[in-house]
Structure formats: C-alpha cells, structure tokens
Image (cartoon, rainbow, N blue to C red; front, side, top):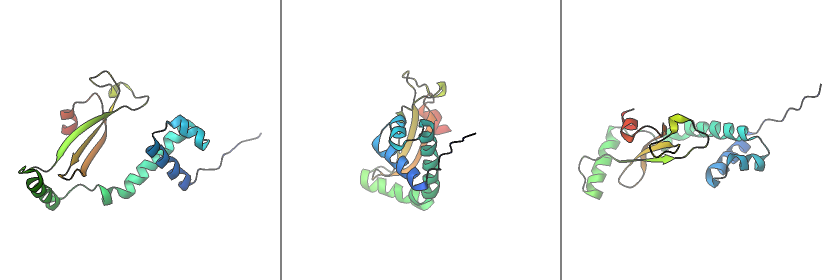
Length: 144
C-alpha cells in the first residue's frame, strides 16, 4: 500500500502564511492556492499562529493597565481633552466572518463578530475584546 505523507509546514512558512493572510486581506482559498495547502490547513495555521503570537506578545504590547497606569490615563484625558475622571473611550465594531452560525446573526440581519476596544487619549488601545457574538448588544458585551 502506497501512502503519501506530506512534510510538515515549518514555523517560518506558518508565520509567512499568517502574516500574508492578515496583511493582504486575501481569502483563505487564495492563500491555499498560493501556498499549495488545503483551505482547512490555512484556516488552522492562521488560528494556531495567531494564538502563539498573542501568547508571546500580549504582556509586552497589550497588558491590562494597573492602578498607576489608570491614574496616568485619567490625568492625560484631563490634560488633552479636559475630561475629568475618564480612563478610556470605548467603542465596538461589527466584523463579518465567513461561515458563521446563528449566534453571530446581528440586529442588522448580517453575521458578525464584535470587536470592542478601549483607547487612551492618544488613540492607543489599552484593552480589546474580540469574538463576541454579533447578536449580543454592546451593553451585553460590556457586562460579560
């Protein structure tokens, strides 16, 4: 019996594929043709690689502020925008994912994932929450 086993995809190729996917906006199908791998392989590689990147970098680049940092942000809001006791501007954005289920069906009749973010007075993210279901309201997302 002949068995065709493909060599594993190296970490460098995984990173290259993921960064190209994130930067280009190409579809996973297009990426699968470019890298000669299956569409489900592209999907799995992107998810796995993004998780690894997040686990390695979140503490350096998006660590939740401590008390001292919150006080600094509040002072900055007062100085820049004349807003007292403000520690962030928050907003949400609906993003349409491919092939999502009914949990992601939003009030506008579309499927979406909600990105919620808080910014400091200089428009830098201080906190983010991604992957809330589109059917949830902004208030429901904030409560959870």
